Length: 199
Image 1 (cartoon, rainbow, N blue to C red):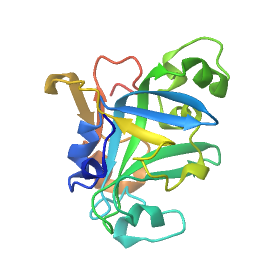
Image 2 (cartoon, rainbow, N blue to C red):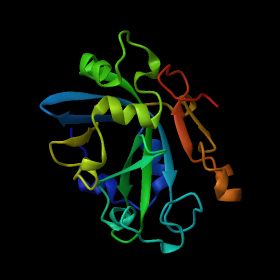
Image 3 (tube, rainbow, N blue to C red):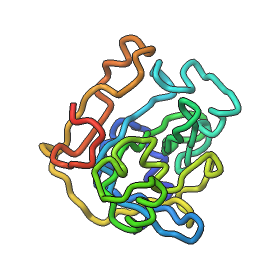
Image 4 (cartoon, rainbow, N blue to C red):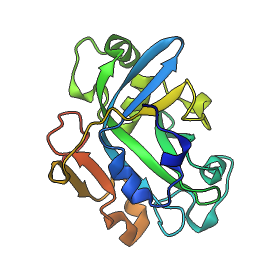
């Protein structure tokens, strides 16, 4: 079942980041269907999180989509080479987002390997937010895409992850955020080999 707007527009971004584990994300880019189960996420809160691009109500051309109603894609470039795929959540004006860090590939694996220039299937195919976007064909052209449409969407396949199977810890690569860098807002499936980092 495809996730609807009502899933994304709820107010607790940290809870949503946990609930996205076990959901499936799909893309249909250039007629190719690719996707898999989300196994690692990070939450970012626009209101009180120094790691969030929209901290202190910062509005730029890049961050403007963060203020939209939940259920759209926020895609941005880091290091001039990696596109990162985020899901905007909450109501319009809140600027909350969940970074999708890793998936367990399910469909379109050969296409994902082609996009990643990988001969063999290895966990680093989709373990990490930059390589994940590359594998799924996500780039800045998909900035603002409606996640209830037919280009990028998420599905609930009734996967139930028991609480003890989920780990939480600090987010990665946000040392600039001071004490907020220590918030345990990264979530991952403990036993998954597709997670970018276990700790």
